[in-house]
Length: 165
Image 1 (spheres, rainbow, N blue to C red):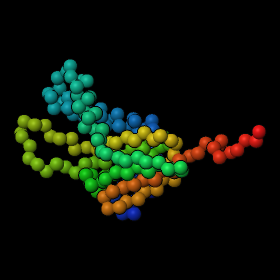
Image 2: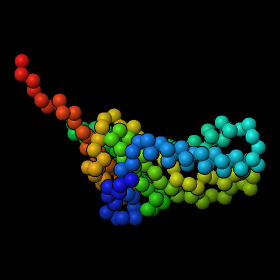
Image 3: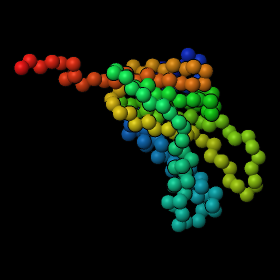
Image 4: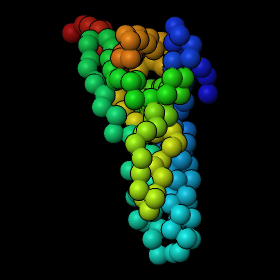
């Protein structure tokens, strides 16, 4: 895991190169931990494994809205960081995938005693990229609470070459 760069305000976010396989492993591990917490909350009774896993997955996988656009040489991913704790945002980049990891700002409203405590952990939003990018050349641009990430694409060597007939 290589830290590519930190935001101008170092406490806002960081961009890290993490292989796609490792990204998936970390997300599955977080879902597994949350599923076990749900299992324990129910009193440790069996026969609800799939239900626990699905609930954990829906809590851990973020529904964060992201924008994805492309140009001739790069992809642009954008999202709002307004709903996340300052300093908790980490962007994982790999050649064909990007994951936004962050800790949401806690919900301040009072809850019924019988309701379970809402998930307080890191959430993940995976963005499958339509082309291969160069993780070492990622360029973030923070505008207030709005983050734009420019992902330069890797061009196949045969592109741009003209073959003689």
